[in-house]
Image (cartoon, rainbow, N blue to C red; front, side, top):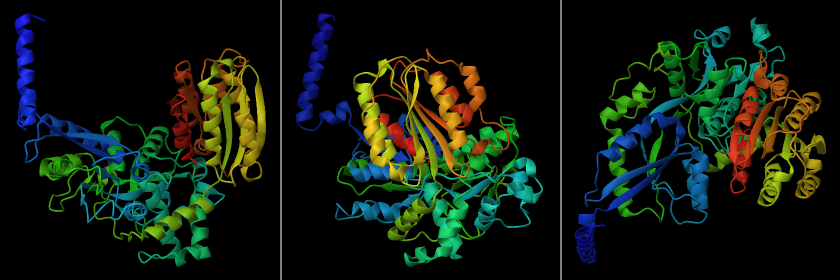
Length: 557
């Protein structure tokens, strides 16, 4: 650096530091208040560009502090669980709906004096919770002349004739999906609505109602149609609209996702059948996207001011009109509903006619517990790489995380564990977990790494044995962890894909393979091809986050 330049910079820094001592430095150097927001990913396409535009415009608080908004998409319940645990400390929580706020407040109050969310947060955008169904299938059930609902779904899910009873044997069985109600707002909305429908009520749910055998039978009937669960409503929409009616007949999601799919279809970007939003005649909930500035000790007055300024920006008419373009209904009822919110895009703005009451926290928790008792079991094969390259931290983390994963499963679930290096070894055959949980933990904890990698042979064996021994009325899945490239299989990747690829009208009920690329030497491209051939999903992990990845996969079951 030139001597005069260095002297100038030094003088400027000295002046700035001196001014900082009397409070003027912040005005010259600039002070930024960071407003962190965790939000339901359903509004990502709307919120991300608006946050970028807001930051670029240089908004400031009344005290002259520049406001910087930082947004992170996360499952609604997953986010608040992390907030309550203290591992996540955002300024704002914007879940997909207000449904879980009573539970969040009840859990927060166990260690705090006040509610986490106080008052009534303003809604950002609106979208009803709907059942998205392929239009020809809805028409086969009598739609639109007949109002459809949860009773129709329960009847279809339990009818062994499937779509044959409606004159369409080529459609196979009824295949249904909703997210895991322990992690996702739409999953909670689904099981609450099922419970209301089973009791023929729209409000006033009590804990005593959950002891009624009729509601248990009804929820179990609806859940019997499930192909799998999951954390993301968007994942169901993506899979349903990409893989078509053979994968899912219908799924619980938000109206805006139906609009988005129909917009793609009408523009030629999707070649799928038309899809329509079914507003269950027994009632549904609004996905109202509340903007909750948290009543938490880490939220400063400046952050609160910045959060409120960003909220005002989002609720301004230009931003609300952008929401309509993406299929959301505006928070301001004075703004007219225009295309694409129309029948051409599969929705009816006169619906929903019946909006269900959000029950108290203890009732929501009781319904979640009931669901755990009646939900569809899983037949699962866990496949773990024990080749020599797994030595050190990798095998230690793999053993511990697999034990934790097994402990997330229910005693009614069936489990098989396969270890592979250059050979494939069954550590425990497929059988109910309740009777062998401790033995599984002991065997997995004793795994030793050695040898090569026969990945394809291991997956092929796991698939063949699960197909032969698993219960087709259960969710059937394989979870594969591998840290390397296949070098020792007798079969090729192409042969494996042909053996496990799920096609035809029953592909939704076929075995799903979830793969974990463990560490830098893994082959994520191959593992992704294996997973996607079955309708599963591929994940990247390392010893630090593999437990988290296993936990996310567990939400599918």
